Image (cartoon, rainbow, N blue to C red; front, side, top):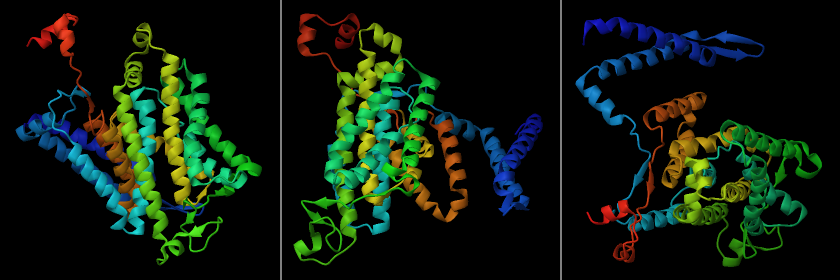
Length: 435
């Protein structure tokens, strides 16, 4: 190591320690006790020292040939899209294996792990819905949790006032949430970027405040109960509560509370698979191409004759419909809903899933949803530092993989044989075809 780099390294270490101490001091160095606080600055100093040592170690490694090589390999690439050549191996066998493993999971997992899996699949649905709006259409939506709340309260209030059950709500929720998506989309058709984000954020807060303050209809902060799911009139409770027949009595088996979780998981898993298939098909259809064109350059998109009003409306409505579906499953899983489950933090978490997974990448969104749902449960023993660890991981991801965990893969389109023979291809396509 060159000696002339030592002053810069010491200056960097001092700056890192100072900034870390400023950040960790109020967070972990001051412990509230009623109206006073207890000084625990030693813990903040230790944490700042660890951060400083890590930063110095990284700088020292970066000065070596191995460190420079490692940094070059980890540097983010400029391209964000991988165009497939059409010669890739088929992943049908792997998908079939994953599908069978997902179907078989309830029979091998305990109730606790199955509950986490259900929550992870719900966030997969939310991530897929927001990915249509933000990842494919490029419309920054910070109020997506509103459609989540619409689906959840449809089941709760629909049962209370109209006698709707789980299956009825599952059919109606996408249409009702899509209607709310259309109501949101019309005022924001000419808005972009920060202005669009602020309006959608306000829409999400309006929905939450209405649910919180309309006591006579929604129950306000007290929330509303949700009915248990049924299957052809068979109930998953010990005794019939909705005029049906208990499942265990009908089949003559012993009662178990796990049957309800098995049912919710299997239906949710199948719905997630259908949504994934629909999103992947939409991406290669003209509508999906219009979404991506709108995301890249709206002016160029409109100059080519694309109806930007229709394109934005479909993105908002389809994304909202998926959020409504997720809300129904969340409500039936919890058995109770109240406005505290639909705060801005939920919208931020769903947006983090889309950004960390990769804007427009279905596989990346699913992976990020699983990680951000399961990771907090694994860190339950470190409850005081879970948010801190979550923030550090997000910073590292944005530096290392700014385009997300998984790069977007775009299918290849080849000219037809008829077009080649008739000579109707553009010049660039002819040159490619003759190589």
